[in-house]
Every structure is written in C-alpha cells, then in structure tokens.
Length: 160
Image 1 (cartoon, helix red, strand yellow):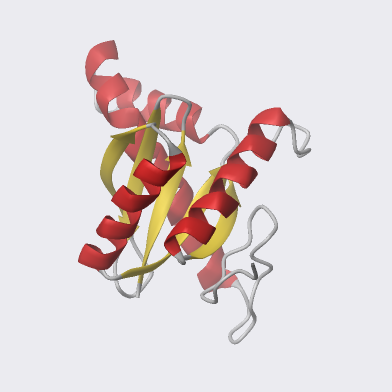
Image 2 (cartoon, helix red, strand yellow):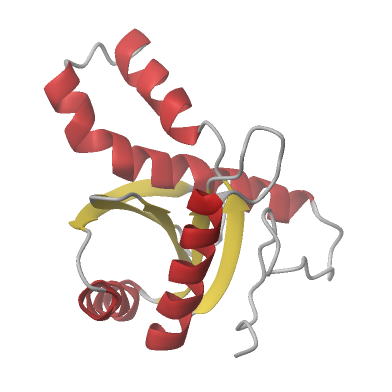
C-alpha cells in the first residue's frame, strides 16, 4: 500500500506519493484547487491507479502549535476528502514546509521564481509526507499513532 501526501493550498493542491515500503516520498504532481467533489474524484483516481490506500494531509498549524483558521480549514477539507474517497486519513504538521522547500529550491536547485512556483506545491507535499513516513518508522513497532491529530499517521481508515 502506498500513501498520497497532500499540501492543500488555496489555489493549488500539491501531491506526493510514497513507495510501497512507505520509506520514500516523491513529488507526484499538483491539481488546481476546485470544488471538493472534483478534487476528490481526481485524488481517488490517482489512488486507484497508483495503489494508494490513504492520504496524509498537511496541517498548517500556527508557529505556537495551535489550530488557527488555516489549519481548521485544512482539517475540514481533509475530513471531507476522506469521506468522499473512502481513503484512510492522517494529518501531519506542515509548519514551514513551503518555506523550507522554497529555500532549498533557491539555494540548491537555483530555480527562478516562475520555476519555483510550478514545483513548490508538489515538493512541499513530498516534504511533509517524508516527515510523516520517517516519524511512523520511528514509532514503536505495532503501535498505531493517533490519526486525528497533527503528526499522526495510521494505516487504518479514520472513523466517520
């Protein structure tokens, strides 16, 4: 089973995909943000094509770790997406992931602003998915993390 990492931006949804061993996350692509029903159908099609059984949605917590308006919107959107697709759902704290990816694209990849804009969403999705995969491997064997809190990742469907 693979996982899809999702960075739900206001205009673009960045996507990443794990390998089947849940060890490596790779940028996958991006979707234009539209009605939930349309985006859910696109994500469900990707999940079916790629053999993904769940999604890890980035949760943009405030710097102090609280759930602000953006994080609440992402949580509501993630839950609605999970309901619409029947995919397992986990949230991951994505504070500063886009900033870290932008720094990397400027400093290491030397990409222009236009080229960065085209790749930052999917790279941020890969960044947050990789962090979730790494933390999941570090968790005690056989221990399920809480999939309803930021930082939780689970291989079981979320309760409806």
